[in-house]
Image (cartoon, rainbow, N blue to C red):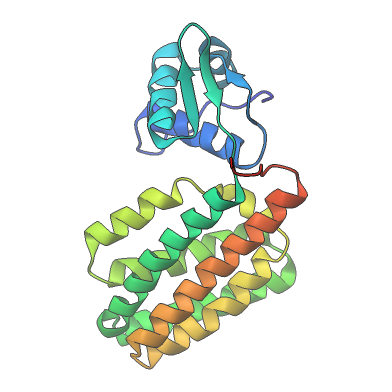
Amino acid sequence: MGTRRRPAVDGRQLSEQVAGHVREAIMIGELRAPAYIRTEHLAAELGVSATPVREALMILHSEGAVRWEPRRGFRVLPLTERDVADLFDVQAHLAGELAARAAAALREEDLDRLEDLQARLERAARDGDTELVDRLNHEIHRTINRSSGSHRLTALLTSTVHYVPLRFFGTVEGWTEASARDHAPVLAALRARDAEAARAAMSAHIRHVGRLLIDHLRARGVLEEPPR
């Protein structure tokens, strides 16, 4: 797995932060099936005690990312194309519904701000500034989701986003261009107050990003064939 820094404090419990690091390591292929994750080794690499690591691995066990095997430890389970596609299908449904609801709820000044953020994102994409694209992309989606007025649905979407290696997207071929291009029909639909068009455009955008990630992971040899 390599030396990993201690998870930064970000408001979540330490066990959740450790779980996030391991999720990312599995998703990007740093940890692959059928490897075992040794609690004491991971604790030493992250500079934390064994307790949050054990708690994190139990969280991942409940999610199906790893499996506890008595007297042997936690084994990484295979990551398949179907796993990633299913994840983005769920996100596409939730994000599409939130965009549809935001179409009626966004204020004119919110729409102006979204269009300004998008213009800045497109400039950053042309300049190759993937870090800025990432920040602006996050702010655009956060503004739309929050404007929907659907706090529980937004929380559900956030819980699925935890499975996606967001900091890794800058290395995915086509991601920056997708963020620059795919948002245009979303924002146009929101400006027109067209809920159905907003739902369709946002869902298409999320599925597009999912396909890009799948292609990237397949090229890296991270994905495994599903069991027959």
